[in-house]
Length: 108
Figure 1 (tube, rainbow, N blue to C red):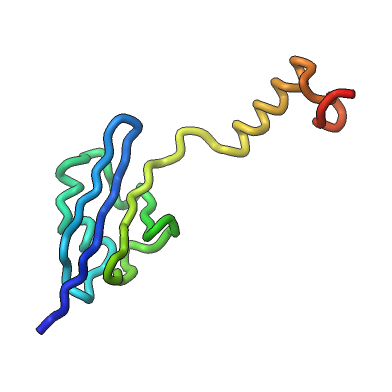
Figure 2: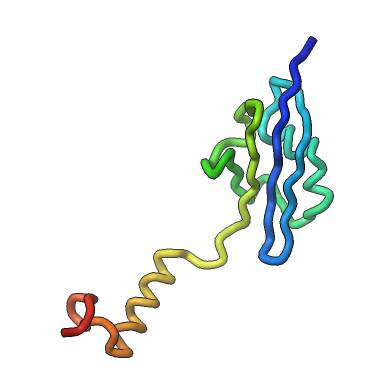
């Protein structure tokens, strides 16, 4: 008799989020669990070929097996490159005199 695992599938938008609890067979993959959860019917913007996934905040593959108690998370694509945002913020601080134009540190 196959053992069943209790897991969660999570997805969030800025104004709406879902956390779906379900029981799956012990040999279920991340992708199978996501499909079984029905979350793809709720959020039609999810594309498993594009969206990264993870278990408890650590990215994983769709083919990875899951364990009892896992929370599968579907991540949205980044809106902006974090490095580019920091670069622009630093440049703005230099222009406004809040940062040293040479070192980038606080002005003396």
